[in-house]
Image (cartoon, rainbow, N blue to C red; front, side):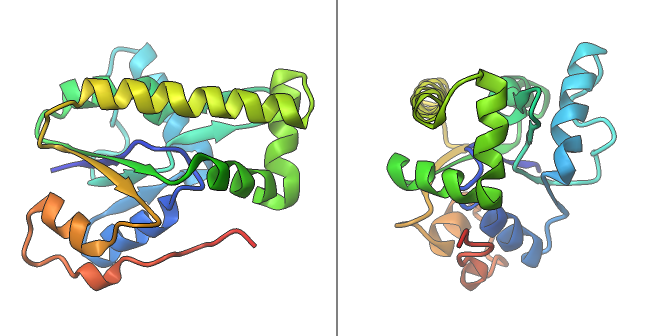
Length: 186
């Protein structure tokens, strides 16, 4: 069984990774952008998306952001992951959009924002508008795609907790208390 976190960074991706890792899942988180790059490469070469990462069963923060490009592999490939790994679970991790924006603005001491300013060739306010557009588009697409599906969980990091994750996965051995806020942006 594979579990994919398909929401944006700064929405509890590290907390989810720690939860699953502490519960015995072999978890991979970000991998310095290599996870996103490998999914893209595998797709382009017609290989299974998780080639080179087959041993893992929890995947989080599947993105790469440099000053040249942004690759949200979780957004680009979630439908293909669903087709290739049909018994998998998908978690759309979320939080109030304005809190997400503020966390991203602070991320890396502002370096994350500067990379997006380079990518979009625009100022701070325009980056925020891009982010909000990406947020609402992705959430809408995911919610429509998974509507009525039992292998999908909408997980608000501010109001939901380990019990909801445990219930979703349906495994009695999962320790719900392992969920907590990890790696909070200052």
